[in-house]
Image (cartoon, rainbow, N blue to C red; front, side, top):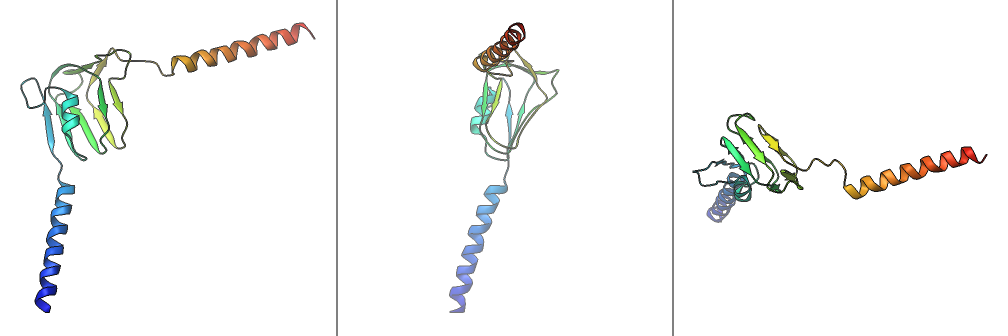
Length: 142
């Protein structure tokens, strides 16, 4: 009976070790013209939680969707050497929809710079003009 318990405990410990080792393993993924990944998006798609993506020097023309938690995306040699230019200028260069994502060391060009949705901005301006006109009319007809 003691041997059976010892074997069961050993198997459980081995499985736990394999499970936790797979969780704690983070990889470094490199993006470059001649590497396995030539686009940042391809590297993001291949990444797992906890990974670091290092982007080589150059200009990358793409819009990147980041939906992986605990991911770091950084340039190899800083923003002076690594440019990300929007493929679709009406969209964000980096659209991050996950928590704990770090992005650093890039120059970003030709991206959507709207802080507010155009329809929302139009509604706000219409409301403001309506309020101003109401106030002016109230003062004239008092």
